[in-house]
Structure formats: C-alpha cells, structure tokens
Length: 452
Image (cartoon, rainbow, N blue to C red; front, side, top):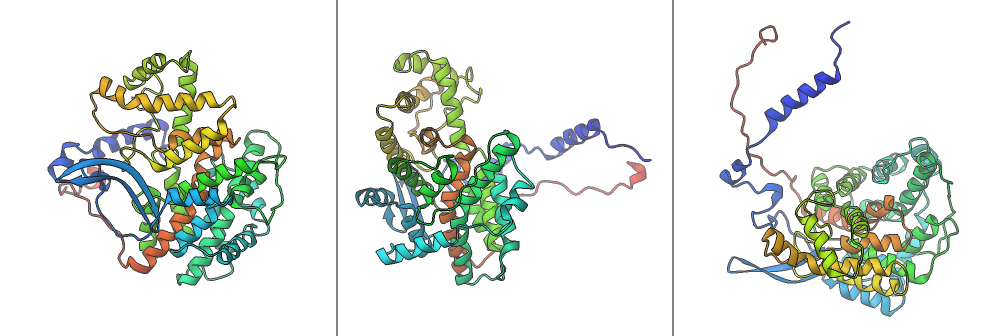
C-alpha cells in the first residue's frame, strides 16, 4: 500500500497553496485593477445596461460623489408608490410587483387575477419530490436545499429544459416563482424533524392564499396569522424582489445565462450566491449583534450607554471583534435606503404596544448614533445610512419566522428579479460575460518527478 495522505499532509499543502497564491495588495493599484468590479471610491464598474431596476443613492458632480436620498425604481415605478398603493387598496402587492418585473408593465385587474391563479396552480411540487429530494437527503442549511431542489426540478420537467425560447423560459420562471415558498417551508420542516427532533408539519396548499399568506400558513403549526402580519411580510417580499443587475446574485444569474446554460442552473447559482453572509445573510449578522447589544447594555433607552458599547464594537473590543456595526452602510445608498425607511415605518406601527417595541427603539438609537461614532472613533467622515438588513431580521422575528429562513425568504422574493434579468440577458445580452484578469506567474522550467 502506498503512502497515506494524512491530515498533516493536507495542512502542509494548504500552507504551500497559500504561499503560492497570495497576491501583493499593492499590485491592484499598480495595474489599476477594479477589485470586485468596483472603483477605488466604491462605485461600480459599468458592465451592462438594464431596463428592469434603478438603484440610486448618489450623484457625481464634477468628479465628487454627492449623497442623495436613496431611490429604488422597478421598471420606472418608485418602490414607495408600489407599496403605498397596495396598502391604500388593501391588497397584497408582491404578485403585482413580480408581474411588473417579469413583463415590464403593471397588470390590469383581470391580468393580475389570471397571474395569481397561474401561480396558485403551479405551487404544488411534483409527486414524490418532498420524499426523494428533501426527506431522503435533509440539509441543515435551507439555502443549500433550495439550490439543490431547483436543479432537481430540471429532471421532473417533462418539457425540453434546454429550450430557451421566451415562452418556455417564462413558464419555467413563473413555475419556480410559485414553488419557491413551498420548497423553502418544506425544507425547513424536514430540517426541524431530522436535525432538531421537532414535530413535522406538512400542510396542504390553500389555492386562494397570496404568496405571503402561503408562507405563514404553511409555516405555522395552527396555520393562523393576522392580515397585518401577512401584509407586513408581503411588503418585505416587495422590497426584496429586485435590486439591479449589479448585485452579486443577480449578476451571477446573468453570468451563467450569458454562457447559454439552462434556467434551472442559472437560478440555482443565484441562490448559492445569495447564501453568502456578505450578500443575503447580512440580516443574521444584525440579529446576532442586536442580541449582544441587549445583553451588554443595561438601559436600552440611555443613549450614553448605547454609545459606550458601540464605541467598543468599533474599536474591536466587543461583539465579533470585526469592528463593524452590521446593518449600517450600503454600496450605493448614502443618505437613506428606501427599503429600510419603508420597513422601519411599517414595523414600528405593528410593534407598537408589544414587548418587541423596545428592541426596535434600540435599533433606531444604533442607527442614529453610528455615523457620529464612526467619525469620533475611526475618523471616518462618511455619509452612512441604515440598510434594509438593519430592521428585516427583527421584523422576521416579530412575525415568528425562524432565523433559518431569513436568507431563504430573501431568495423566495428575489426570484422575481432574477427571472427578469435572465430574460433581459437572453434577449439583449448576446456575449458571454468574461472579465479579464492580470496574470502574474513567470514561466518556469518543468522538473521531472524524480528530480523534485
């Protein structure tokens, strides 16, 4: 028997890899490399054109970045108007938002009714899918299971999944849009049963429920929820439905689409990108930091005490020692994140008079103090605002949604945006997305194995 590959061998080889792969950070400046497709001032490198969404947080005036109140525009419609009119007409808005993103125009009443009916008819998972794909291979992480399930649905589709005609692509997109909430909840229930030794709840679908209602109905053991709870979740889905072509998961979807791959592969890749804590998992970081604040600040309504603890966080003396206050700052938004503004207002209204109201006020204090403390402690005189993750995690908890589903809910919502961008890439892309990398290694002479 030959030499055994030991743990020590693996450790030594990884150390060798690190030595051979580390790149001198100064080279990025020397060769004018736009790391992460971003310029030195944090603005993104233009890599495409889109009709789907505009994320606007600053203007550039004579080379200077000037902060402005953030705007989020879906297909020309301001997100504030979409949320406002859904509330004004006392109806659910996510389905209308998804229709707008997919087809580029607002639906009539009849068109929206037909779209809702189509979603309802396609929520059911294929026969045997839950047992074969979920129960027989449970996962601790719901995002992994969602990505795997999307790929698996390719095999269950009786049509040609390599057909990229617009009609075929649209049927696939809407089918996945309908099934994503069911995949998410079922994967969570199986995870609870297999890993947490909890009871398994598998409720039958109710065809008359909206996407937000379906999620709460399938998730809760007694299936009960209030209209206010469902409407708040619906707002969250609307806010997370789309955020431009440059965000990591959407760009990932467009990159795979540009290669000519099938829809299921492109969408599952977007889920995998969103799973990352630097992208969709950020609200979990906010929730964890809030718990640390609650445990270490005796009087939450005392701004002096809150400021003292945040100074420790910024000095890497508290929290996870990263020096970051999670939920503050955004790559594009400067003065405000419109999603955070909308969510905060609606959440505070529902939390009023409840025990959780104090936690919302603590987050509000953190939001107000952070820019001042960043300047005081770090000398960073930069306009910084709360992003949507600052309040979304606490809203999920108020809705009794488990932390395991914070990021999966993001994916369920963002399926609408991913689909719209895939369609746009198919229609107008034309070229495989392939940025260039500067190669550093010099030519080496090959050494025969006996001489190494």
